[in-house]
Length: 158
Image 1 (cartoon, rainbow, N blue to C red):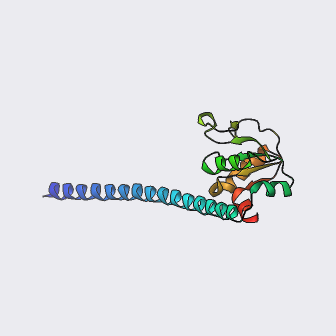
Image 2 (cartoon, one colour):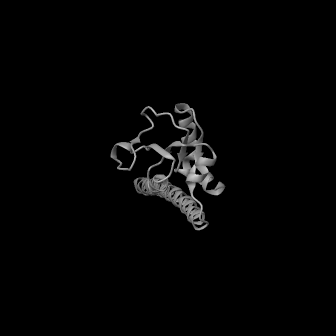
Image 3 (cartoon, rainbow, N blue to C red):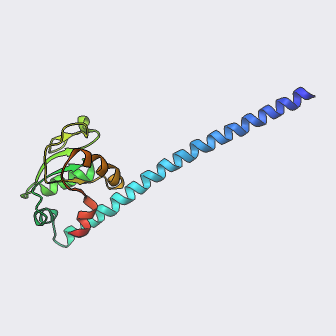
């Protein structure tokens, strides 16, 4: 009889432990998915603001010119970074290079370096990875002696 009770209790303990572990894994997955959703919502809202800026007949090159930034670098060479490089391509603003974690696997219209590489001197670095701006700004401040600016801030100031 005792063996039966111990067996049932062991089975219940194992099931409870499995349920707790499964719950933790599910929560971690949900948290990760929520982070991605928040990131993509922030990017969507930023790109929507960019469309509004364009609809008003404004461009980002004029913002850089007004602020005295002639030579910049772009951190984050995914969609927003590529779009920024493209917008500035036929302006007086020179995009000297891009910075990205995946620099060794990226193709872009400008040279792309990693954060570990030496960073050429520029007038400003524009960060397109807006959801991680604070962390990226902290890292860049240790490597570069220029303003670090969020693309989102520029879009709301134009």
